[in-house]
Amino acid sequence: MARHHIHEFCKNNNPSLRTERVFLPEEGVVPDEKAALAWAKQVWGRKYGRLYLLPYEYDVSLQEGHLWVIEGLNIFHVIFRVNGGGPYIVIDKYTGEVITVTRTA
Image (cartoon, rainbow, N blue to C red; front, side):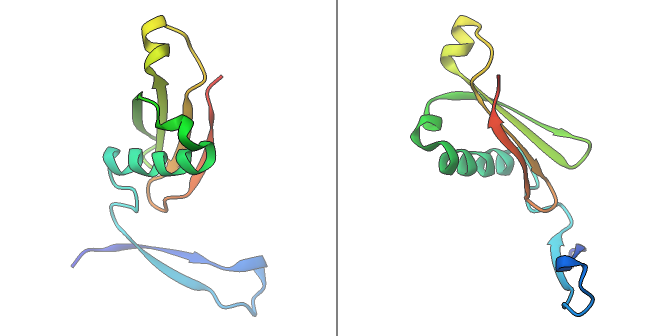
């Protein structure tokens, strides 16, 4: 049987509110690079629309042991060595929370 992380959530620091326990997989909600990229594409698609369905090369890295950092680089930028304009996102590996979503400068 797999072990799980326990995350407790309580709203407004009000002791009368019930604390909920959420059991998450030990490897996290976003366990690997493939899942992180799929998660990022979903967020980008909803935020930026079809523009981010263009062909991109992606740099996916795990930082601080729990933050997936994904940066997209359009093929145009690769060919002409132009920096900036690609999608950028930071996702928590364990909870799946999107910490930052933006475009590179």
